Length: 42
Image (cartoon, rainbow, N blue to C red):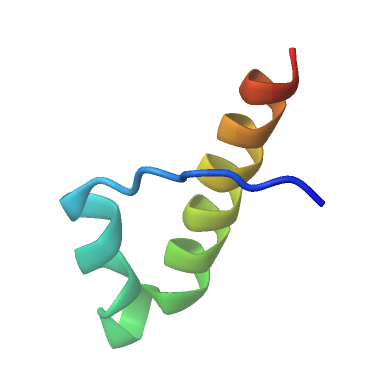
């Protein structure tokens, strides 16, 4: 099992807590996490 350290910028984190933008915030969070994982594996 691998461990990854994921960095989340404050703007993205704030976006997650906005009720009207929660879905797009989660999408952006997942995109950021997946991109960082793919970069770590490359």
